[in-house]
Length: 132
Image (cartoon, rainbow, N blue to C red):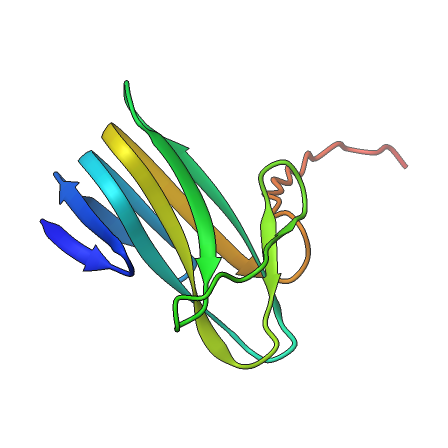
């Protein structure tokens, strides 16, 4: 598949996409160009996101954030792997994932509302009899 997004000619071969309410995961045989992931935010809201991108044995990759007119939007680095953006108005912005000659790779983008880092907490209850 060859698509034109913004000013880049994008080539996607062996493209397999899985989407959910707050994530997009892609596996590919070859990726050169960009892939836009829409995120919707309300006025005054902050959206947090992380991007994990692995490319097999070649190529390089990166990301940026754009508004619906293709203009760059600032991102805040919250931690080593978490970025955020503030919505000044209710709109849809786009996380743009890029690759140059990426082969046999995959990426996953997660986004969420609220503070900082998503944390998975597992709680175990252990029954301990207490003598009376």
